[in-house]
Image 1 (cartoon, one colour):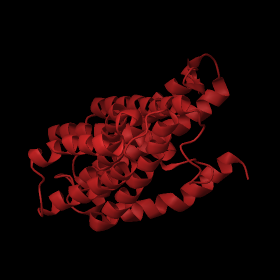
Image 2 (image 1 turned 135 degrees about the vertical axis):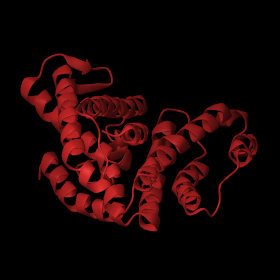
Image 3 (image 1 turned 135 degrees about the horizontal axis):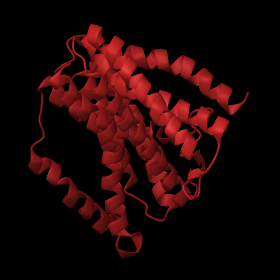
Amino acid sequence: MSELAKRVLFAVIAVPVLLGIVWVGGAALTILLAIAAGLAASEFAALATSSGSAPLRPLLVGGAAAIPLVVHAVGLGLWVPPISVVALLVPLLLMVALWGRGVEGRPLEAVATTLLGLWYTGGLLSFAYALRHHRFAIGAAAGTALVMFPMLVTWVSDAAAFFVGRAVGGPKLMPSVSPGKTISGAVGGVLGGAVTAWAYAAYLLPPTTRMGMTVGAAVAAGVLLSIVAQIGDLVESLLKRQAGVKDSSQLIPGHGGVLDRTDSLLFTLPVGFVLLDRLLALGA
């Protein structure tokens, strides 16, 4: 089976399951995000270790998986961590590095990559929960529509960039980081993202959220999300290039690891949250 066929088969199985979990939201979505964050954090730790900056792996993986749980607790009104608790994370990690790593264990890199990995994985993935339970998300349909807006734009942009790049070819976008990506593919991805955002905002958001965007706002959102998605992909490619690996792991057949599948979403979910929070508030 070709890599493309594996990707299509995985998408056919995974997307309906993902939609169902997003629809249910709450604890089900929290558990999915916690698992994904923990796996992504583990892969990030492996990349960092291969690059010579081994993070504090147990704290990184456990902390990343815990972030969606904390976000869920905040959403339920059970607990809101004060800023002092968040700030204490830094001295905690420094103390662990002091006794657990010492001078030879590269403590500066260990703490820095741990903090980066926590936010890069668990923190950014948690914006899916924030979108699902946004103040505009009145009901499951509205919450699902908000989550799927940046996700669908990301997926279509990625597919458009792939097929346009293969069909047109031309100069490379950033060959030192990702040799296969072309400028024509990047432009195709932006166009695909813009059209998808316009169609989504015109035909899916109004009946589900009872809100909308102007045509200009929707197209601008699609362009920005596509650009951000491609940057997210390039950022993970940069990390893999430094680590000297092709994929973050071999967990998903035909797709590599969790980071390989979420690299763009780690950027588009928070940007999508900001865009929808602002643009839907303005209305259309």
